[in-house]
Image (cartoon, one colour):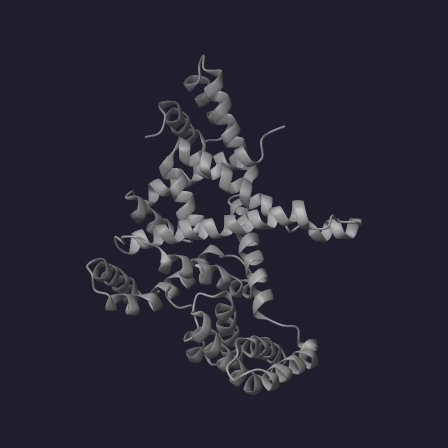
Length: 189
Length: 175
């Protein structure tokens, strides 16, 4: 998203917050573009065809954000809520898949079936979400940094701005947060 | 505010993380003298960092779920190409037997349109999906799942057809 659009998002959020209903009409297309940019970054490193699959996440996030009763405090606040929303969408989806697997889904009947089913692992995301919840209870800022950077697709600079610290601090804090999460999710024997 | 114990772990982890093995041992010996729990905490975190292979365990878990969500969404937005004859019969029967603008006919038009998109027959798909969106929006509003599905199908038609400016119109609307 261009710098001009970023500024416009902030201005329109301010105008909307100030009671300018017409600002919403101009804001929504920019919000959609903003979500696209976030989702693209969230899937960084993926093959190009996978970026198409972020469309579902964008649609869901857009619908939830547009319906949210939030007093927007500017673009950074919007990005933080978007990250939280994307996390919730993915966790809700993983929970639904997990229920289907355990309750309604047919059990694999052959080795091939079991291998084919291996990549379908909603529990990984649920384990990450639970570990992240524990990290936030221990150190709220690190939990939010993980949510903003990984679930929201924010850069280090944006994450730092959202949390009011320097990018170097975010770099250090994410380093420890990742180690802590990995230890929680894969305890040593 | 984080617990002081956590702050101690964090400070030592940050100091030790980039040191060579021998220097790291010396630091831990000095900093954790008499505090075996602190040493164990920091050592397990340092090992976790080494074994984690970066952040792939996070990005992979998120990426898999994003793809799964996308696949679930695709399922509702696309229709297999080989069912066209059945969908056409259903659509024609409803169109002939129901009042004009009936939502049952609109649902059939939506499904047939998605199927024709999958077949690359965009010119035939467009009027079906456009009409379906109009009827479903009028009857059920923009939030209804049937309307959203038809709009998504129309957006995908225009995207596949190379008409992004038209696709934009069918993005989800504000609630």
